[in-house]
Image (cartoon, rainbow, N blue to C red):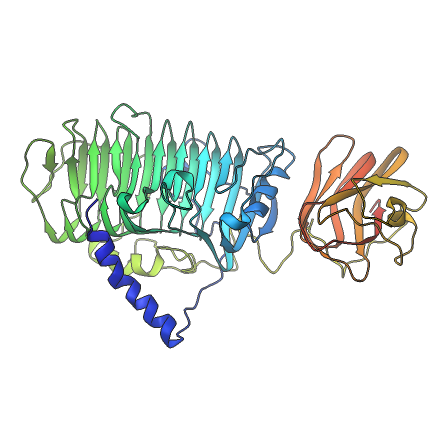
Length: 519
């Protein structure tokens, strides 16, 4: 790749360095999931709902994200994973389970469905760590930053792609994200947003892609043409060398995007691809539309675009720019409703809406960004201040008979000097501890007993429980998952044995009482 990205990046980074040196603070906004609603091709093929209707789990590490996926009852059980903090190689380990297939060093969404990953609070940053979607469907990724993912050098992740999709992926909505690198292939980076091997019905909206040699592709080779039905709208592509995106086969709808400083080429339609390119704003760039680096032609339908200080090279050999006066050479029908902003206001609208931590603002075609109505939340938009019903609440003590009294107890290996029976003896002065920071303890009965609530009481001097799972030991089903100690509610279940499994902790927890209740 050319050195242009690195040179321009140094100027952009200088502003950030000055802010740090002078102690300036950058503010971020709180956001929740899926506000504004899914748009584009992700609305087709049955639609994209992510984890709507499922449990909401908070995660601050990559391992916790994997634990949330693996803690589901099945690989298709809906779940919303709220992420806050920095996710990196140091806190992203492989987790095993029947409802997941994960790997260390990458957020792996493999052979699963019905998942939302959304940044909340002070923001979610995936640092040098990519998100890999493979053989999966109905996925939402929203309000996160993914930066500096490498395919060479150290550390590496996800083949160098910030977000990569492959192998029969269907219905993905990526919204209000920031995807960025610090150079091109010679610096170890690959694409920011790649789709290949039969990936379809995808929307990328209100996102910022910048400082990379490659923006992204649809199709990994001239023969990989089974991908398509992809919408790109209200995105900012800035300081990118090429592939904004590269299209091989299939249909794409590209509207209301702001392209700035495309250094070598932009939308590269080839190998029979057809793109509808509406009301975009191209600025200070070169060869922003055409068929490049191949003699396998692609096609486009253009209308309403603005070309501001765009330069065009001569048509020669495998270099076929659409300009200097782009005209349509195909017709593309769009099956969904959409409203266009006028191209002349796209830079303003996109600057206020695109990227993570922008308050999830959207546009309604009026050239005025709209703030989501907090009184009318989307079904997948949980209130971060309102805990999930399965989260422990120490202020909500259970009522009725503690069914653990007189029951049996067992579990995984225990710390020296502790006993399983201490969790069912009614005394908070005795306790069970795992032999390390993780482990499990169970309450059991001779006959089936209905349980819908448990209360985990920790002894003084205890390490802090990080994440947990509550299991129906008879079937292996996950009844609840979350973090911390206290009261945990779930659907009433008849069982002979119930297990509290500590999957992460700070120090060694001490469980004084494992109380169980029918209601």
